[in-house]
Length: 117
Image (tube, rainbow, N blue to C red; front, side):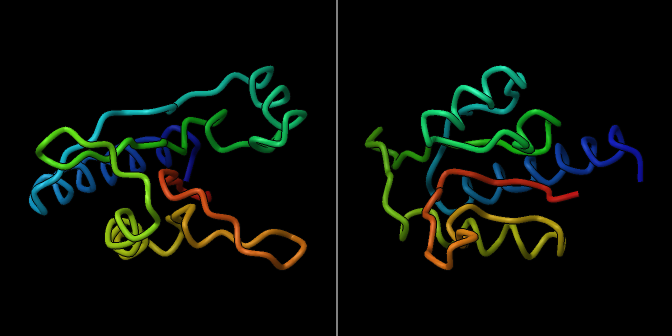
């Protein structure tokens, strides 16, 4: 599949995820979807990301989750059902709440959803 086809599939899955979030009685705002290579390099130096981020390929998005009272939800448990749903859409979809570092530790990036194409 070409990069543009992967991006299109990713966008379709994001739309399904947003609908699923709404069906569960929550809403979200869109966080970072595109990241320039320069920004990715800066984040990597600051320890807040990696140089080869899928955001640079438009294959990742961060979502800010809220309940209907407008309270920002940031706990792993708030995002977990959506991460499970996201990964159920396609075997190459990955949720940041399930990330494991190359050193074996668990990395929690609960608001992150990507297509690892």
